[in-house]
Image: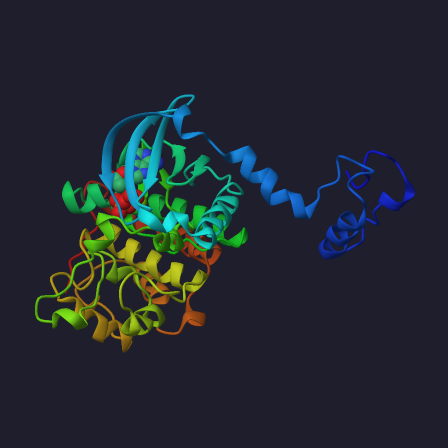
Length: 355
Ligand code: ADP
Ligand code: MG
């Protein structure tokens, strides 16, 4: 409605007004006059209350696995849920960091899309900070590709990639940068793609637990100088991020993530889907950093796929962020991959190999 409920003429809003004007007008109305008025000052506190789940309300079951920011447990809270308990250590005492966590949570609650994991709430009382989402059945793309070695037929790869592009396009439209798009964060259940862990990357700063210590360092690098990079993470990092890693010391500083760096990461996921492998497989991290930082890409010379398939890959991996497409362009480009070629050999995986 463009009219607030008390009907006073000061609340009548011109339908031609810009969004900013609308918000300003709403803000300028005294909320004590009208309890229905959204009050910016109180909105964050109210939001937090609405999404706060007391930790004791959760029925925490077995641990499923450990990630960079904490441990994920299977649990029950009005049905099956995944509970990501943050390794906060003593840093949860830090008010600024806790406020940052709450802000990230405020962002998560804005997401409603069928290809995104359902955010259900969070435990926000230190030291027990946790994020509660719907439980994803099925497997991650990582498990399917790298552990089970399932070869995706090209038409299935296109369907999966299209759903990823749709979920990501929605996130970007909501001005949320994923920052950690990789096959470990993409589930597939009965053909449906569910993307997880969007927007959580900065929570890493809150976390001091064991897992941040497992950032590996290459043995050839002197100990005091070592670059701490989590395994399986490097190949998703766009050149501009790789270049800013040089100064990285302990955990993550503010890395320059953008929509375009998400696009680069999508390129790597697309490569994994097509080739059943990592780009730069088996190469030491310094070599990958050196190449990507200078714009050298994984060669596709031995990849026998339609031209359109490779074009998508190369455009996502463009050295200059602005040369990368956006996700709606990706979705269109995926649609344009000629299906006739797919029909010719429907029973065989796409004949791809890596150089
Ligand atoms: P990573 O993404 O590096 O695997 P996470 O902390 O995100 O680390 O996940 C730890 C484990 O929990 C992984 O095995 C992951 O597949 C699983 N997991 C994470 N989120 C969910 C979820 N919503 N539903 C089911 N399993 C999940
Ligand atoms: Mg994850």
